[in-house]
Amino acid sequence: MAEDRRIRKTRRALRDALVELVLEKGFTALSVEDITQRADVARATFYSHFRDKDELFARVTRDLLDELDERLRPAVAESAVGFTGKPVLQMLAHAREERDLYRIVLRGEGDGKPLRMFTEACARVAAAEFRGRSERNAVEPRIDAGLLARAWVGEQVAVLQWWVEHEVEPMPAEEVVRMLLDLALRGRYWATGFDRPA
Image 1 (tube, rainbow, N blue to C red):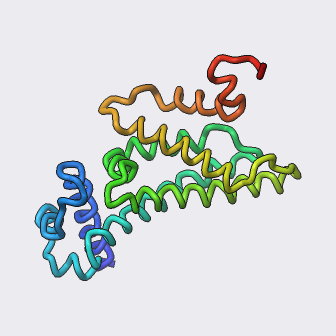
Image 2 (image 1 turned 90 degrees about the vertical axis):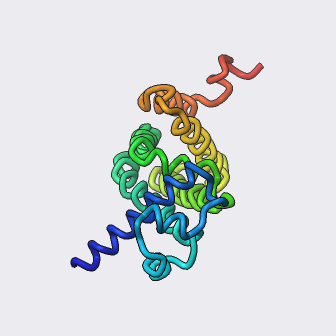
């Protein structure tokens, strides 16, 4: 138990050092030595946990995704049809708490690998949920679930990136969710001010 606590403490220190340093100087300019010095962890300890800084960043991204999934699961399960806005609100709340980590992932630091991990994982979960909703409600999707999931996740990632990059939130999370819900339910044509196609 004490060893697990030490491991968690070490990994947390390495994670925090990685995030701080990437924000300061970018992932490419970082060395393992920079990270270990900032974390106050011996290099040998770093290498007992991770092969290199890329593996550390991948682990930090996986942990972020696991935390996000844990938060979203109850909000998604709440509705058979979906489109409640609650999962997006939970995602924004998580991003508020982990703002700096979201910033470095969504900026594409680390040659874009963490961003691809984030996007792919979200698209997989969304596609499975869209398929499941269709089956549970005995409806036939009009658009392939994989394509729909990628379009939806692309919107979410773009909005999330815009939202976390501001020092002060550009608008309240609830307002962002309301607008995205309107977009999901009514479409882009309506959102741009038109009533119906000509």
